[in-house]
Length: 312
Image (cartoon, rainbow, N blue to C red; front, side, top):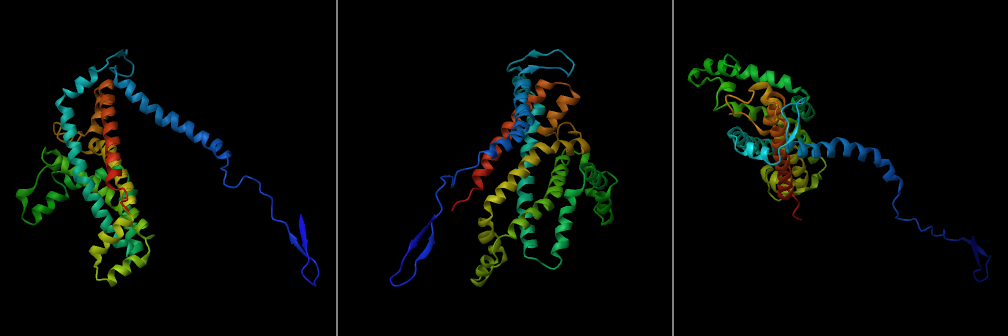
């Protein structure tokens, strides 16, 4: 529809009419919900279902996959809490998280900041940092076994420099077995995490760093006082990912290198779940520890989220 206007002493001018309001502006498309249904079904079956199954099995007495099942109630909880191996696993897991997580996050952030400054060969450095993430877990375990065995590289290096008195069976000693696993966690995760930090720091405007340096701030202050607050929420996300990986993924390193020993000196909670389920065939005990591990992971995630939330 158009309208005609006649200016004084001139011909009529044709103006197009404004488009009619459809009333659909800003309304979400309902078809997106239908597209999400397959993903929601998959999530419910393979994510929510196993979580519910953990709580159900934790209340059962189930001595093996093909054995008869009976209701145990809170009996598995009492058995777990009375087991000294469980408390050794709790202590080892707490030490692992308290040592590996801060070292990994702090060193990875500093390394990522260095790479983000685009030093000479920074592209090559990114690829080199990513290499541990490309190596399979058994291969990484073999590398550490070759280095830390009694006749391995570490003892050979100590003997070559006249420090033979410091040699030890690192993976077979109660005082060093857990430390070796922590070293493997840090080595395998620090490079991958540094690449993630470098990618996030690349999106920070260069003007922030340049302005700080014009005000007399060095790289150390710029790194922690300028760039770190900007990506604080991303640091929290990466910390949560590494927390979950260390808490739930340590079982494979323990299985490949120490088998939880000597004794229970390197047994972690995640390895205890595997050991009781597949070696001792005590599924009720195993999933009771799994419930405790699940709750510990949930509490840890909430604590990390609160610690790294943005304060501006």
